[in-house]
Amino acid sequence: MYHISMVRGDGIGPELADAARIALDRLGAGLEITDVDAGDGALKRTGSALPAGSLEAIRSSDACLKAPVGESAADVIVELRRRLDLYANIRPARSQPGAGGLRDDIDLVIVRENTEDLYTGAEIDLGGAAVALRIVTEAASERIARRACEIAAERGGRRRVTCVHKSNVMRISDGMFASACARVAAGYDVEFEEMYVDACAMNLVRRPEYFDVIVTTNMFGDILSDESSQVAGGLGMAPAANEGDSFAIFEPVHGAAFDIAGTGSANPSSFLLSAAMMCRWLGRRGGDAACSAAGDRLERAVRGTVASGKRTRDIGGDLSTEGFARAVADAL
Image (tube, rainbow, N blue to C red; front, side):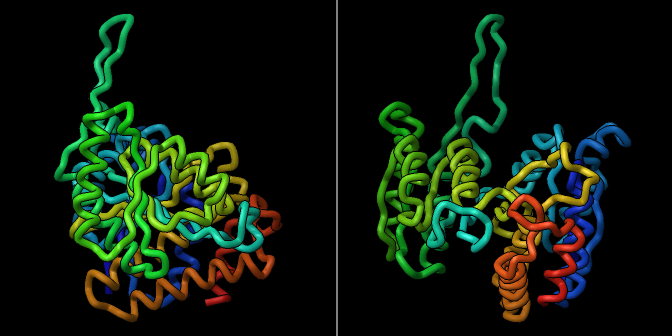
């Protein structure tokens, strides 16, 4: 039995959480789910977007599923990434038949450094000017490069790692990142290359099928992963993992979408696919082949349901959030 903490979140978050329970109850992967309070609602109720009790509940669980939160996102997920040292943000982008992607052969993963860069929030207001501190270290760059190379090896296939940076402008910080990635990749059986971030942004539209694994810094990864998700079929189909050495949080790439909250029209696929990633992570960590297989089954059920024409409105269907979750449960 795995103890899973679930942040229900804000906006469409609670609807996604309810939908996930429908499918996960049918999956039979031995998941015991406990709701955890965090986000805008928690801030109003308790004065903290991440109450101490919620943090402890997440810490004591085997893994966390996190629905999107609202304006307090930085106080929730960014804080959790730092406190739990969840240094690897892993965002697959894979073509989904019927979801409206640019091509049918997109299958890439963006591996984003998750703890440094401009997202540390180290900013200073000088009155008429503002300064933001960009932090890049060799240690963090090397460990994210290792994770990217591991993923490329696990995926098989092209085994290509593309290091994305802007060292022609940020010569010290991005120069350090690029050098660290090249040094680590030399120890793996992977094809390693470098690409400037503007060229990568262009090529994700021009030839997204080229990419296998992209490794990059925090802010570049945040931007490029949204782009790659849209190219492959939209944020509604985009899962993500925040992994550390001993804990991980899984969440959809998209936000809380307050404009459609309560309408029952949100696509739960990204949350369900994140849950599939969670099952595979639990399986790898504990040597539990059954849990890993459950993750594969869940992903096949989600993708098969969409491919069969049973879809939510954002990708051309008419199913509600709950209706889609029940269709996935039936497929399971």
